[in-house]
Each structure stands twice: as structure tokens, then as C-alpha cells.
Length: 292
Image (cartoon, rainbow, N blue to C red; front, side, top):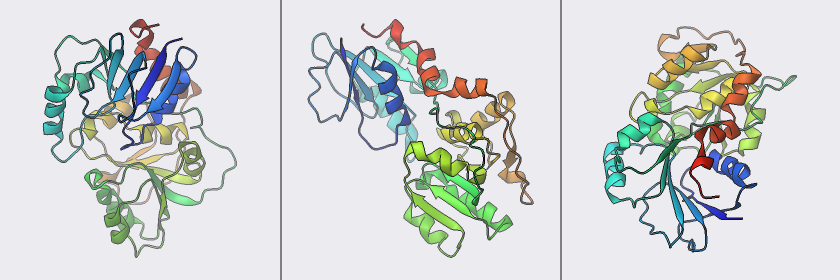
């Protein structure tokens, strides 16, 4: 059995990492490592990019996965540097075709497309008491401009109970310290997030309508919908397209003048299954190109 090593710099959460490991374990000896490790003994080395100048050993198959485009500041410049400086792999993986077009490698390297997905545990849970008005799960980095959404919400509902799940940012903690209902939970294991989502009346999905966020799948919107949460948020190119295909209770922040009544999102089990990580990975068709 050939070996497959996923190489991750641990700078960002990658829920797909566990999904990949589970998917490929029947086919390969799977390990997860860091760029500093000795990678010479693996048959397949799969990098989550980043910058990478790794030169393969004879017989190694190299995968470069661009899980997302570069984020601000200087996002487009970072993407240009990746194109110029990164070594040439045997396969590149992108979230979607638009991402590939924007990175413009144009060097004939084969590509596969693997959209963002969700774990099996994201689903409605019956009989759970609602304990908060609004929950946000995800990055609170300053580039996410989360305060623009929270300010609107708190102006409408100053005493709202809000849970912010993830690594807190100091500037947000300082900005909302006088609001007793705003709670920073800190990072939470992915397996525990559905329990929190099912205790909320609404999910907050705020994604700045700027490059690259407005071109990429909003994983948290999939997670909210899969758990049956109605959503308060903003619309960008990706969200608008998603809502045309998946009608769900979505309250646009820009048009919100009063606090809405919660109405559960009715997502079919078939749709939930289509969003699962295992389906997303299978649909990418990796078996047609990876060494067996």
C-alpha cells in the first residue's frame, strides 16, 4: 500500500484534513505532517498552500491544494507571488474553477476541483433548548470586518444574546465589552459546534463583499443551514447564487429594520448529503490521477 502524507502549516483551520484522512485511509497509509518534517519517504505528498518550494524525490507524486485564495492585506500580490515562486506539482487542487482562473498558473498541470463541505454531525437536533439569539462561527480576523454586522444587530437588539465561536480578536473583545449578552466562547472542536448551533435562534453569516471572500464557498452558511438555522447576514456574489439554488430563511443585514421571527431552514436530507465532505471528495475524482 502506498503512503500519502498531508502537509499542513497549522496556520488555519482545515476541517477537510480529517475528511481527507478518513476518505483515503482505505487506499493509502495516511499521515499528517508539517513542512519541517522529512517527507522523502512518502509516495504522495499533498501540500496545503501557502508557499512551497519542495522538490520531489524520484518517484514522488506532489499535490498542491489551494484551499482558498490569499486573504487581505495585499491578497492579489500574494497570489501573484504564489504563481511565480511555488514549485511545479503533479496535480493542483482548487475549490472551484474561478479560483483556478484567478491564480492563472496556465502551465498544463492537471487540476481537480473540490468544494467545501461539512461533517456528518451537522444536522438538526430535536428537543434542544434555545439559549442564544444569534451565533457566529468562524474567523474573527480584522479583515473579516465582523463589527459591521454586529453593530447593526446590536443597534436593533441591544440586549441580544450573541455567541461568537472561534479565536477571538482583541479589538472585538474591547469593542463589545460593555454588552453583557456578547459572549466569546473561544475555539471549539468541530464535533461540538452542532450542539451550539442547535441552541441558537439564528446564525450570523457575514462575509465581506471583497476579493477573495465573495468568490468562495461559505462553509459556515452550509453548517447553519444543515442544522436548520435561519440566517442573518449580507449578500455577496457567492451567497446570492447559493440562495437561488437553496431557498432558506435569510435576512439581509442591509434591509433589516426590526428583529425577525425565527423560522427553521428546511433542508432536505438529500441536500445535506450532497454537502458532506465524503461526497465532495468523491466528486473531485482524485482516484483518476493519484498513483494506486
